[in-house]
Length: 115
Length: 116
View 1 (cartoon, chains in turn blue, red):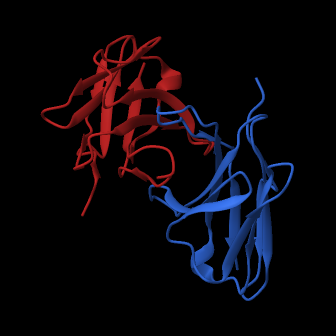
View 2 (cartoon, helix red, strand yellow):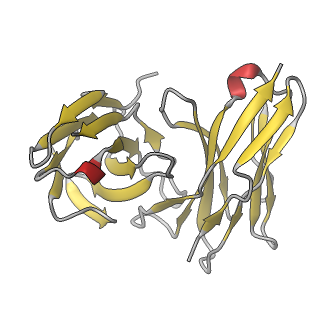
């Protein structure tokens, strides 16, 4: 079965640079979520999109922005990178199931290292 | 306040034995969902099992089962017949409300090590 695709899988940047992470959800999934997982930490919710509109916002810094495109893929744009942005960034996707809380399926993650 | 509590930072289990990973949660919502994810050392986050707050029966998925005790607000994961490949970090997570509430909160995780 098709899974969530994230690219790149690994990324090395220097401080103050910008980075763009891409996420391709499972086919027919309409909701995309972004999470940040620091070393030894649990994942923290950043932002989500439903049908190309931002649906919820978590602890996403103002230096970050994201969008979902017409083909449902999503991009997380990160500017003025800081050392503390080094983390594993997950994208997850889900499909609306009416009244049932839908399961989020995670991609393999993008490991970002800021030097 | 911490919504999801996993009190076991690390657990050891002998191969072929069963193990229970604890998870308690805090919510005032009537409708919520509880999830368990497995994160191997390679880093990916693998969905294991889901329990809805209105589900009357405990969820089961192969060797995984969820011991859901609603009154105690606990959702422990039971892994039967442990295998070496089960060694990983396990996260309990919760989503509250329905539909548009997308925020999934994770516990701190439990690192399970299966001994041969």
